[in-house]
Length: 340
Image (cartoon, rainbow, N blue to C red; front, side, top):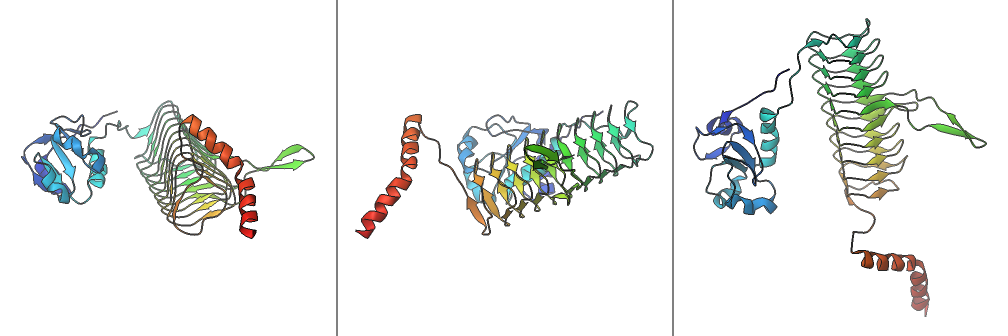
């Protein structure tokens, strides 16, 4: 197991990014930090104007900044169109995630019918089921369980204690964090005179390329057809995706969201934290839903949507709650007055 350590000069960084350099090209950078806490050997960035005052006191070895902000800072800087994207790109240079050795750990259990290439890494106590196929360069960390006939693409990383149920399919470069369950049964039951009868969930979960899924998230398999997570989707921690949901490419879902069964979410959507979506509706491409919003019907027009009331002091909130209860009564009085 190795942990990378990377150092690079500002001149090399400027060349790599195609950025304009202000400062000493020989200055060495060995890490990254915030404007407030970065030291002289670390690179920082300014993407949000809210943090502009910190430029006056930052000790960063250089700051990634927009070209139009050049006049605001006399210290060492790299000027380029999108500092935040540059930060995202460079962050991988200084990522300290351990690199695991190729091969199958002695304590792992790999079925004879499974296909595991020499370039893959199967960690301690991991389990690879019958007929499973693991792609080139994929890492299955300690204690992960890959059930029968699962297909996982190339250069994926499946973190510790992830469970992927039978027949699910993952594309290339999928990253799944610890404790996530892919392909558990959907919540399918039929009621017979007050008794619940379980419906076998015979679909799969099919995940595209470049998908990132946070820790302790659950994605249920389809009842008949598949649950689908398309290319480039990012899903945060502790999200529930129910059976037969379809999520379009490059949609982002923040923590604690719940998406009910058979809902279809379009491409390039954003669900902020705690959003709830009822089942059997459709949300078009390009929709942004603000935090804690409850979506109860389909959305056919792109844009931003919200529900509920903003927080206030408890006294004010209680007054508003009382007024909300009287809205119907007030509406009826207004109608009477209008007729008069």
